[in-house]
Image 1 (cartoon, rainbow, N blue to C red):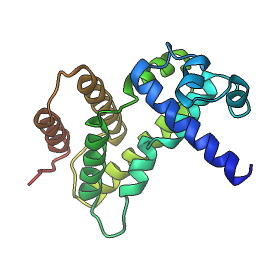
Image 2: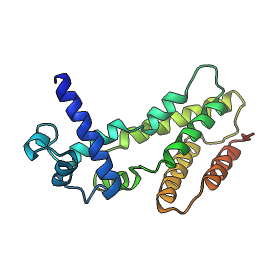
Image 3: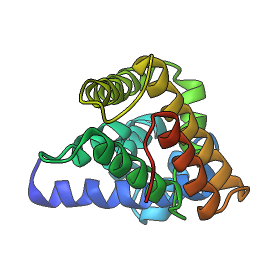
Image 4: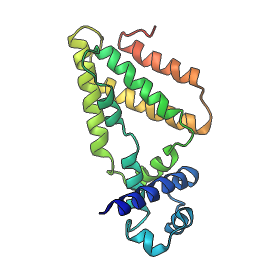
Length: 188
């Protein structure tokens, strides 16, 4: 793909994100994307065959959990500091106003196994982080696998609550502090 084609595809993905944020996943049609991008239907189909492939391209551009976890795993940080940085990065994405949360959950309901691998990678990364924290005596946890699942479930619940307007940043902070407390970590 030439530079112009790459730029055009990037433009389509950026505009599509806005449409998906506003309308969710299920309601968006290729016609909606054509109108948002001000391009021809044929021009859109040169890059994407359907809304599913387009939404998947949008998701690729977004930070996924495993990328967030990888980004905060810096040398020199304790497991507790790394977990705190991960949860803070999660909080930042939860509080974003242009969130794809609703669209992503709609997509996941239709594509039940679409992000199974990503979720498994995130869980494995969190489990290892917690196990390392226990081994280094930074954390207390009898079952790192269950603790990792709980962290992911809490973050998913907070995303939903933030989208419905049922939670404040202070409440998100309290939930993060609680999660850390269950692992024997205290936030200062």
